[in-house]
Length: 314
Image (tube, rainbow, N blue to C red; front, side, top):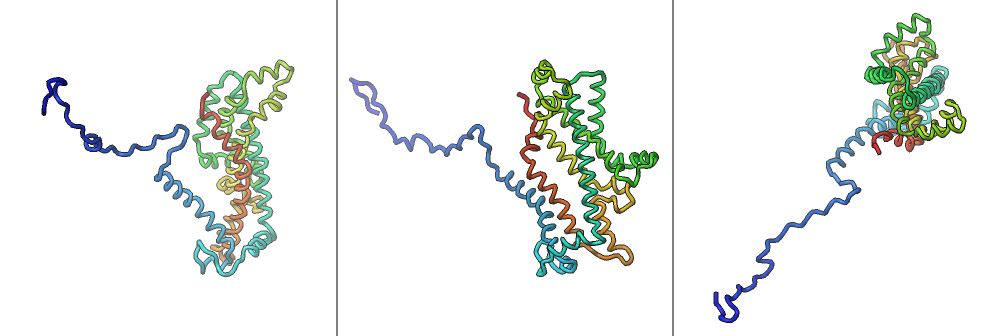
């Protein structure tokens, strides 16, 4: 290093920036707030769950297009050479003097009266528990939570013994009356009504001279529509797919729901001289799930908002 008497020690020669500063790795793109992160693993898992969920439905649709012999000679997830969907539909409604139509009407009866009644009672009970104070409210809450935790199959035998004592077995009431009780629906409406119906709105209606009944039907009930539809869908699916309760309550095939009737068709091949009608069982199963799929698709905007209600506290 050389020195200069006028300017002091000489500075070292400048080195190129690329040699002095190490090359930095490219920084990761910052996550934009409010924009969901992309996850390859989550996408793969979601795809596997989607395939797992839709595969039985695909098999059911394809199998409904096959005849009885076509079910045995063809691959399950592909069509047979003989397209027999229309013939299967016709035979399903005419087999055994059209008993499938009777089973369908029975199921609709159980759903309309049972599930509809359970929804109405859940809305009334949830609204009352959310907006009124009365002695024993904590005890009612404990009973409701405990009832949600009890499986319905555990109550089937006691319910049968009770109904046999009063002579209601082998009647539609043996299926309808137990379906009127929905602890989960009551709890869901309780939580939903707590946030959905403002107390100030109820007080304003009372100041204007509206009674409690009018306040409920004209003020609160429209606000409870998303929760009501959600409970209605849950109770409808539970009643539509109910199998064990009708199995122990009903003996007369004329009062069978679809679940019990299709099971009887499925089992008759194992009886002496019974006819194997697995193609009708598959076609009937496809017809059974069509109303449920249509209900979910038509009412999805209501039940999705009802499920999210109460999850975020403002």
